[in-house]
Length: 497
Image (tube, rainbow, N blue to C red):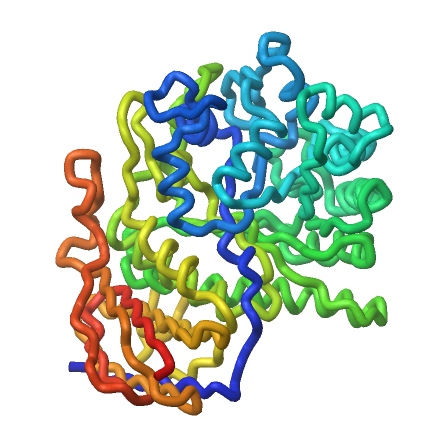
């Protein structure tokens, strides 16, 4: 059996964790909204048409913020189509996903749904076909109490209290040629800067996210990010970054995605810090990883001009779940700069939750690592000194065999330790040393693994891929010997005694 060591010392805290790092994303894409979170004719729907079975599955994920309404969709979307009496709302063509949008779910429905989902909104404005002025009108409609045209219009629509959305995205992936009204870096930078000024005039309390590169594979990466920040640095609070992974036949490279994501994050941090130095600014630009996931883009099959077609309804395997666990370790280990992140998406479209339009809800394998880290990876994150073998990958070169994450909540006295073992053939005996935290008692031990990395959950077999609870180590202390099965994801929880 291979051996490894992980040393964590309470004096080496990396950062306090902003809970919004466990955010998600709802876009008008495929069945994410319609027959996803909103389906008035479903037997579980409440009086507003929100599916209660879906709400329950989302609430268990403990998602504190949700990005809406896109995504690519937002770059051709007029938010005014989704307000007022539903019988008067227009049906439009959605250029992003070549779908039919009937606008029965809009910004007010989202605000109501978010309250029931125990989450808050991260609102994206249209900087494709839209204008800075239209973005300002939306902020006025949502965040001003009364006494102006758009705030009073909201009150006419039955919402006397403002929605008070506190995070706003300045468009989406505007560097992408697939985007409605894509822009060059300088064109976008100018438009984003002027939009930012209007939005903060409307509500100075909000935080703003500027579009970074949509992918590190873009020819303009990372010069796009530099150009945008040079124009917008003092007007925005975050630069966005998006990253997706898919299995392409090389298991080791796929399992090592966490290593590539870390490189990507550090490149964006370095780019932002270059602009900070260039501007002689005291401000540190934070990062919003507001799209990330496993996404099998090669399986995309867009059917033209249908309402709520099945788009990107990936069925996630055990291996996908392991990769998600590894990505989560990287995201939270960068919590000093990554303050917000959005799993893209939440329901049906490349999502951990899948619905049957006539039946119930299925939790894909990826649901479980996200639920574990979102619920228990709270408080502060600590530096892990990991001594382990490396794996050689075709795509990313040498990568650590283990990906680890340690969090500690001083208020509750609880610690969580998460670890991905990427070795395809060998178990690993891990010596875990938790120094200066005092005596710790293991209170939970769950492992996600299996002989078939391509095993999936289905409506017929919904528990085919789920974590198993294993016996906790009885003794209290600061050192623990843990066996990590090959290709596995493990969660350990401790409490100070």
